[in-house]
Length: 428
Image 1 (cartoon, rainbow, N blue to C red):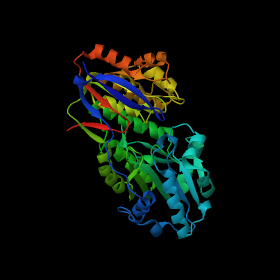
Image 2: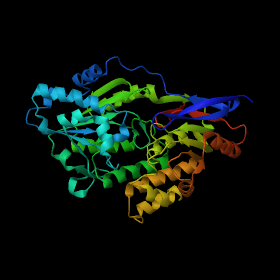
Image 3: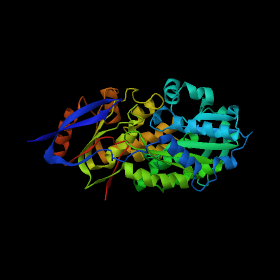
Image 4: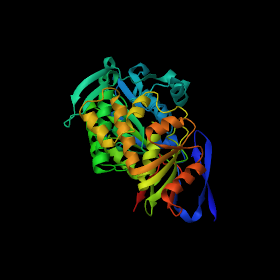
């Protein structure tokens, strides 16, 4: 029987391999080849000078105004925040803005601060140009702005609240919670409190469990809620990129939070949407680049199970060198083993007090197991923890595939996804 030698990205710059019977393979998704622009800084300037459904920066950014720029943390390493900030710095100088009037807030959301990684992402010279600080979810650092019409609390970073002008940066990629990243997502969860973020996570999980996935959908109830929060906060302007799989800028979109973001999604689909003939019995996927820890691997796992037939097997290769999750690990170990409907019922009844964000993701992970058997190939998570979570464990992709073929049969249809955190497998 002839087999195909498959190599998948793993960790920072490594690979893992697997031998797959050729006759079983029904799709092999690789990153779409979409060319980047020749001059990235020129493309950023073009977008900023030609905003979509919004005035130019020099039309509303005035000397003496307090400016907050919401920028991405170390988990969004591919977003060209540094390049965006260099251009914005030059533009502010032209307008006459003093650097002390500009604060760059690293939109951590519920992520742990990792100053050394943020320093690597932004560079020492930017710290000399801007006051760069981390977002904090401590209640003393937040302002209560009430609730959205549907009841989501709006707890906003004080510095953002007190700024006259608010500019959000981002990179448009598929995301399992609001359908796509960037746009208003830099506000929620980026610079909001845990109560706000847990509510959004819960809404997303409930929709996924009860109504189906919104992965890769531009218009959906979760995105609408986040957009309404950004409007309430007063996000004036966004600068969002679409990046190809070579980490090159394809195009930049700037302007109105909603309109510029939606325009960007149409370009992003060319990079991230891939056609498949049908869902597979077995999907072998690398979670790269979302493989910092198992929490981040949620993105890759979602993409893999999205392409797997119900009851099939999804094999996830993810380094997870930071472990399970320093913040949410205990919650996940306690809850993921339960039924997703049971977890949601306990959350709604207020029976689980700690870590509301972890509760929602636990329900999401539990939902994955309703869709597919999951086998994880990793060096960062102990086999015992994966067993507690209800996931299978294998030392190698070859071992994982052997287990999967025993589950699904020797004639199982197999799909391969090289970067499942960045590819939406669509049956057209």
